[in-house]
Image (tube, rainbow, N blue to C red; front, side):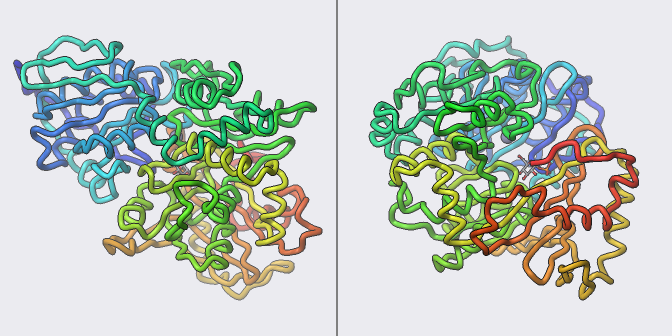
Length: 544
Ligand code: G1P
Ligand code: ZN
């Protein structure tokens, strides 16, 4: 194999964010932009010669071109095997599983998750390590340094590979294995959940369901598992064909973007269960007939009911949530005597806790939940978890949620996002908030007295690494919180996220609309951060 070493010029904007490098496709299409980043990944790794690398993406625009380039650079750098999903496709959780199952050295996942795709929209790339999870911060920091100093990259002079036929191809010393992207993952799901029970519940009509794949990667996974294996009727999976631009939609499973599903679930004669997943298949939205389950509640309910699922029947070791996720799961942990960890936003912070068995389940308010079965959040896993729960408890979603609140109380929760805010204004907002922090503790606003006001720092309990500046927190005496963060996944300007929560123990007050119940805190949040005043906006871009 002819290997060429080509000179290149560094780009200074290749800093990975919350989950890898995300930029507009047009940015990735710049001369050597992708090549630089991929070579920098390999420059930041040791000992991969002769090892295997998993490669796949969510199928968005530029996926195929990117895979062909990565194959050539990986071959030139000395990997001996590349394991690639057919058509260049792998959902993020499936990629994580495949890295683990085939003991690969690591994997490169191409996705910008829930961001829109297409020639003028977003693309992304991230590196996962051999536990199947996103590379830790010390790796992404080293990677960023390498992107700043790169002067050359290696590339093999081979022709484009056939990605569409399952099987092995040998190119000199390199083996390229094209795998069915779904089979291993479906097998894993069957080993976790009670598929017989699910089949029976579906065929008996006890569970009727709709799954919105949002024209993204979970289409083939959901069709195979829900329709082909579990016997749900054809048409259960809607928007099931992955499209390079997700059909022009925004593949983010929330009620704002999964509109078709949401309308269906709030209509008369709706199915008993509805769910959606995002661009790369790691997020989930759970709905019942006329009801939406917040991701924070979903995590708490999963933790409280995990013993009903075959894989977790012996009990779970502990739970974790990202800092802005509601404290609902903490209440479950306290009652069950389980350790509960609070980590910064981003799945990579769960990796050590999962690897060492400290936790079994974890989740984020941003429609992500997962367990120790892989090292990414997992959309279809969450869907199957809920289906298994409904079948086992023989109760509809609404009743499961109501009973949970009766037992643990309700953490009323919402998130307001202000997207594409001018960077200078956003930084001004953060500065303005920071300046107020030292004087806030002890001050009262209506019924709320500030208990603490600070910036969240995290010390990983396993490797003691410290992550600073992980969000501004204003916590009140009654446990209510207002949290502010700037997104690390956006590609236009800055996105300010405001997270609001309040605990309600009184069962008679559980059926409140969250926006209404949180209105005082919502106004207070504006008073502190002045996002409306400073941007001239009148409302958030998205409320979830
Ligand atoms: C967002 C979510 C975060 C999640 C990440 C990747 O990151 O808030 O919880 O881990 O996407 O899916 P953010 O844009 O807030 O940095
Ligand atoms: Zn995602």
